[in-house]
Image (cartoon, rainbow, N blue to C red):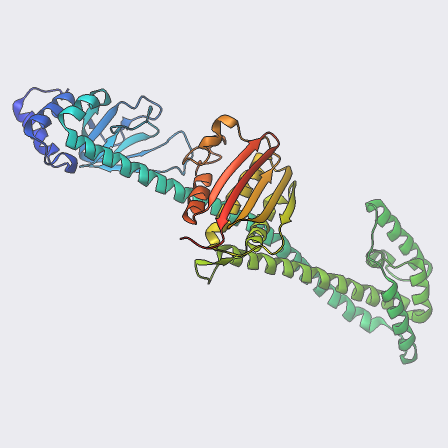
Length: 469
């Protein structure tokens, strides 16, 4: 109840209620009844208006002040809801909320009318027009929450993708930086040995010939383990010391990495003569620089591949609707997601030859593959087999994403495309990933289905070849 039978106070509450848009044109008798069934509540700044996990049994009409509500026992970055004077909040008619999911606290002194949800049936009969408006408010609230959660889902997915790409880019960029530093060391070493060599002009031709012979005969070093490599280093060091080469312990690892055999060393020694130490250092350093150059090429190529994949993934500088090569789209997504796949997932590709291109929104289609592959990897606990197939099926291109994880329980398979439905633990997913997939495929006039038994889960996505958008 309002807590007072003072006619003047009731009239004042009705006057305030009329300033709330949903109640503005309601009849006097109806508003008197509503006030009589409500409790006037006051909450000081910092006070709690509703508490999470308590029964959701009250609708609040805000007369004064402002409150903010958020889940205090959940993630700290959860959504925040604000209600101000003139708003209707709490439980609304036809809401399926059983308990409050948030705790509301007053940020300005709050005065409200608390109306019990148990009186909703009588409210529908007495004030049908108000009931329609309240249902409209509920619809708007669901739409707003869904939009916010979808945005958070996209940001979370973007964050995961960005972190993975940063890691993928960091490895080759760090390798390139190490290689550049190693090249500087090599150049400095060459300057020093250039001054130390006493090789005469007549011997340079013979040594150059021996170097080319050795270079042509060299094979990449393949030591079965670290002990074998150390053993070879020690053997080379002993050979160098027997030939009075200074600082043999420094030169031996360089020659072991170059995979020079005893025969190579003997052949080189004949041509180098007294300058054996400096000339071996020069030759070993040049071989090392070749290896470093190859590593630099591989590292920068990997960076270029990733940047190209990012550009293709997002379809930067390209029209939203365009001809899309499904195979290329899938491969780009697999490249982008390499950071998750490389940990323990084997990928099997089965692409039909001469797949037709489809008219589609390229970047959105990549979101579909990303969500399906990400879910498959999570289901397999990052250890299993992912199969990606693509083939033509009548007027569609059929894409199958399959995994050998535990499968989706039969009783929940019909719900997996519903918003906010998730089989993941608390804090691991919002339940919007497959909803996003479903909406994108539907937007393209495509079809998505799932078949799942333990050890075999298959998502089938059919994209029309000719756009019907």
